Image (cartoon, rainbow over all chains, first blue to last red; front, side, top):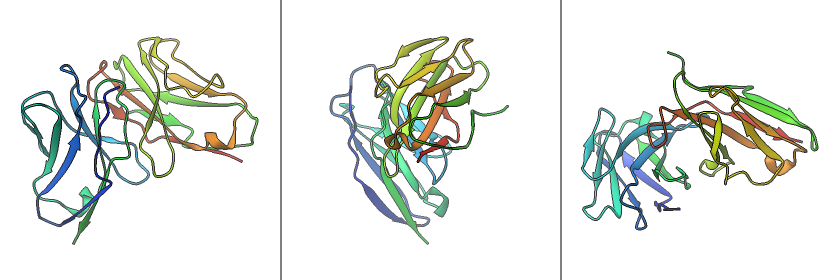
Length: 106
Length: 113
């Protein structure tokens, strides 16, 4: 299975942009890149996904490297409610790793 | 419309007992997934259904675990002879079809004493 690697944790200040990286060097040509986030005691929640082009939605932006071996989730203005574990996963088997724990300082 | 629901929300059982965990997916979603999440870990894939059939059960840890989806909607995860190591949150998700956005339920917290 194609796997992803992410840093364990990141910190941000409220109202500042946050860039959450993900490496997926073994991605195949048909794998979509999905991002989910999980708040404490809840199931994961969809954030964004993309294949090749950068994507924007109301929650975030997804920047995908030209070779597709890495991607970055961008939260344009972090809020306290964005503090969560963020998972980057590929489509095949949709297997999650440990994710990035994002802390947001007020 | 309703999201994915899972029952029970909590289940406490004794070692060696049999348990069933239920998942009600979003209506019309043909793909259904079961995951297991231990404390501090990300969700671990167990099984994926496309319609009524288990399209990929490679994540089931052993033959004590079994899942069904007889009518292509509700799914039941069955665990026989439970062990303390089975304690985890069991998550269910559904999507319109594979590789589409997954919608997760709140999970069932299973505790095996």
